[in-house]
Every structure is written in C-alpha cells, then in structure tokens.
Image (cartoon, rainbow, N blue to C red; front, side, top):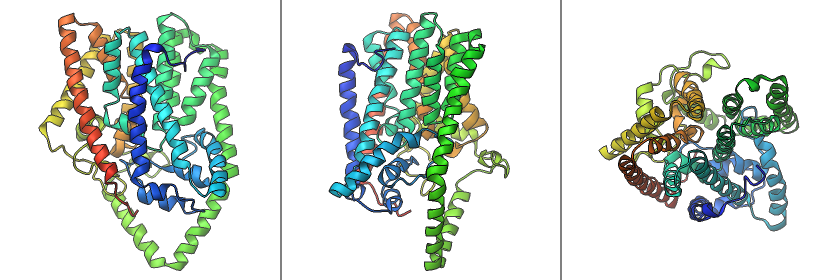
Length: 453
C-alpha cells in the first residue's frame, strides 16, 4: 500500500508511451480553441466554454469552475468535486489578475493526464499481478482497453470520468490483492476508498461497498467496519456538500437569477424563442419518463433497449459512429446512429463474444463475481431503470474494464494454441479501434466547430 503510486520498472515504458498519447490528445483539445480557452474573461466563462467545447455530451464545468467559480454540476452527485477544483480556482484567479491569462485548461489537463496514466498503471497491475498474465499479455489488454472510444475520450475531456476510472481501478487492484492473499480490507482502507470514489461520483460508492462485501465476507458486517468504513465517510461527504452548498451555491443561484431576469427584460422574445426551441429538441430526443416524481422523471421507459445495446452500450462505447461523430445529444445528435461500415458491427460482435466467453471461464472466481456485481449495477441503473440511457456511452468508464479482465480469464483457461488465436484477435481488434477512434477524434479536434448553444 505504501508504494501503490510508485511506478515500477516494468511499467515505465508502457506508461511513457501512453503519457505521450494522452499529452498529445489533451494538447489538441486545448489547441482546438486556444484563443478562446485562455482569454482572461472576468465573468462570461460559461458562454465561452460551452460555445466552443463539444465532445459527445461530456461537460466542461470544471473549466468554468476553475476559471470563475461558477458551479454548474450537481454537487450532491459529486460531493468532493468542488473541493478538488477549488484550490486550482484560487491559483488561477490570482494568475488571471497577475498575468492576464486563463490557465484553467492547463491545470485540468495536467490532472487528466496524471489520472489517465495511473489508470493505465492500475489496469496493467490488475492483469499482471492479480490475473497473473505475462507481461506482453498485460500490455496488450491494457492498450486494448484504452482503444475503446469512451475510455479514450475521458482521458482528454474536462469531466470527472477519468478520475472515477482511476479510483475504481485502484479499488479493484487493492481488493484483488486482498483476495489473492486471503486478507480483508481494513476499516481505514474502506473509509478512504469510499470517501474518494463516492466523492468523485456518488454512484461509485455502491461499487466500493460491494468490493468490501466480496473481499471481507461475513467480516464486512462488523459494527466497527459498518460505522467507520461505510457510514462515516458518507456522513463526511454529506457534511462537505452541505457546507459547499450554503457557502457557494446559494449565493450563486441568487446572482444567476438576477442575470436571467435582466436578460429577459432586455430581450424577452429572444429568450422565449431560445427556451422554446431548446425544450422542443430535448422532448424530441429523450424517451418517455416513468413519472413526474423526483426519481421517476429521470427514469426512461420508452427508449428501445435492444437498439441501445447494439448502437450505444456495446456500440458507441467501444467505437465511435462515423455520422454525428462526437456530437452532443442535447444539441445536435440523434439518440441512435447506425454505422456506415459492416466491419464496425463485426468488431462489436467480436468484443462481446470475447467478453461473454471470458465471463463463462471466470464465473467461479470471487473476483469475477464482484466485477459482475459492479456491471449489474450499471446495467440496472442505465438499461433497466433508464437513467441516462440516451447517453449511456458516456458512462463507459464505470464498467468497461470488465471486458479486458474477462479476456484475461479466457487467456488463462485456454491451451497455448487457442490463446495465440485470442491474442491475435485482440491485437487486430485493438489496432483497428486505436486507428479508427483516434483518427475520428483527431480529425474532429483539428476541425472543431463553434457550437453556438
């Protein structure tokens, strides 16, 4: 545990290569609208960033927060995210006044690249140390994982997903080592893991709790573990969120209300028409809600699940569609887009078959059962209940790591002859995905449009 963040000698070349990839993509994101992203506006950051940034529905709220301390994300769902961004805001605010330059995109870019590199490290260690694959196989499956469209995109967008990915992979690595050594997750370890994973995204907390349950078994239910390892970190996060809400969000909501009222008075017809068009688009591109309640209005009961699985869950998550590439459902992308090439559907079938065969091979493993419980959480929330189902692909970082780990079980359970075949299939598929997804992303960033939201 003491050396968990120290990069080992055999990991360094892989991390160095991936570091250059992540650096290049983040540089392209900044370059795409450099003049706008780095201007020292005193207010108005929301308009600047939302007008010029659009990548598959990912948010740029972190840039806006670091630039001007405007909070547009839900702090109840991300209770520690503002705490994470606030020190960067303080430094950036001072720099804007001192040198007249906005460094928000650089601060966020550095942290995104760092989190991406450690995601590589933990993915590799899971395959190498827990699954006990050879170095070459661990490297192959790690690169294969990062060839997935919506694993690669979070490594360059100013959203929380890559930080969640790193923390979830770190959790999988830690509990995997515990299971391997017939050890239990200590109370203090549960506290820290739950505090940070839930703090970044509250839905991660269920997975961390499940990890503790599968690792500790009956010892999970000890009062000390339940209180200090589970309840206390959640209470701490609730306290932090409440303080932030009163200190920052309440005053901000009053200021925003005054701005909105001033705009309505200045040009009421323009505001009304914009709101009407916006509402019309949203209603036409979202499914029917289960009801009008706080929870039921977020549940989608009409979006076709089969088409979602094919085009979005196992489709867009792994490989981008050629049409409407990196467009945003909230503004200019239909819910479903079909691929122009038959080879895309073949790739999807190959990935799903490898995944399913791996699950079958590893189904008796406690570690695999834990992974399946995590996967079931995402399936239940996103596909059964329909939360966020129309943009289900942006949640890929929360579940897709089960695919390379499942393939690892498959490689371990096959004869050398068949293992060579699987390696070849993974290599060809991963190479295609890297070139295909990478070229679409690069082309989009080099020709990135102004969105005019």
